[in-house]
Figure 1 (tube, each protein chain N blue to C red):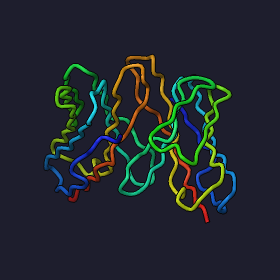
Figure 2: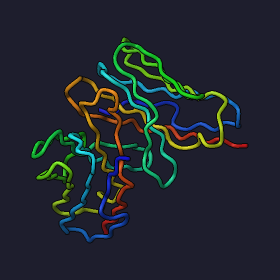
Figure 3: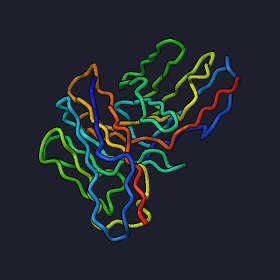
Figure 4: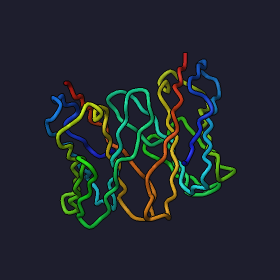
Length: 111
Length: 115
């Protein structure tokens, strides 16, 4: 079953912040985040493993709450280059190797 | 850099045809995946493979089969193409046992149209 992402779409002005949420009905081992620009393949952003850690680089970070089976992606002071569709991918059990993606969140940044 | 190559960028087939989508990766990855992408539905897993000749069904395997005779190549087969299989198909691979690098590498996709 696919993880659920929210919101489905969001429009921001350059410099504003965004939060994208991902939740699963299953216990999670890991959460992946990818960004896809129009006409291109998805590109890896980060992976979070069981343990409730938070990761980040530059102005994009993510958290993983394993008790709630949720992850959130934080985009701070958004730039035009952040536009695209964001997908979370989840793995429920280590060793299962099955990676299932959500329905995506379309982020549009306007000047 | 890892390269995942899908044989065709665009493909047009007729209903009832047998269709082969090919994917090749050059980094000796164990895991390979086939997803289809449709507007509003995200990326849906069709099949994945964790080793040569080993395969597992994903969330939407009906109407599809796969073949992995060699580690670098993972083929998606539409036994009898139907119009509802018109979609963008994405192949991906990863080195599952590299704990520092479990990310997926995606191919550029094949846009399949079934008429």
